[in-house]
Image 1 (tube, rainbow, N blue to C red):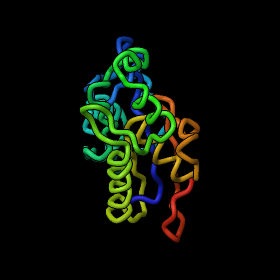
Image 2 (image 1 turned 180 degrees about the vertical axis):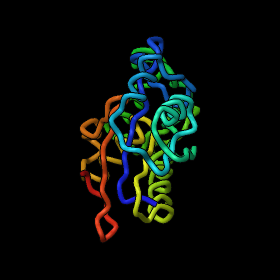
Image 3 (image 1 turned 60 degrees about the vertical axis):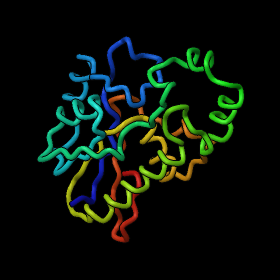
Length: 189
């Protein structure tokens, strides 16, 4: 049950993952990432939903919560063949059309060997609807997930168009607090 929700991005990754598009690669937290997540000044949470990927599970384990529930819908986008590569590495193997689509019309993007952005967005929306039904309130919940998931979630909440998605970026180990109104609408607290 939740009327307060903390949207939390997992902690920092080891150096070898810096500057890479880490989607479904099951990267761990760095030691600094674990320390940071343990130090977050968050209240005790009744429930935490998290991506099943290791970095999110390890981050959730650092929080004070009654129970942690992994949910596949909270996993980062599946970059397929581009996963765990730098942009330069992606640009070396991608077609000009793929890069153009990714930058100008991301909702039409299908990552080679991965998922489409439309599928990614649909599973985030499905989780949100399910959460709304499952956690009607009162209480305090958390969602520990990835940068891409949080950008789409917050862009929708803030009314930010997809062309400005980066404005909804949450740093690793960062969070956004949401409060549910009596009418059931979430807003930033």
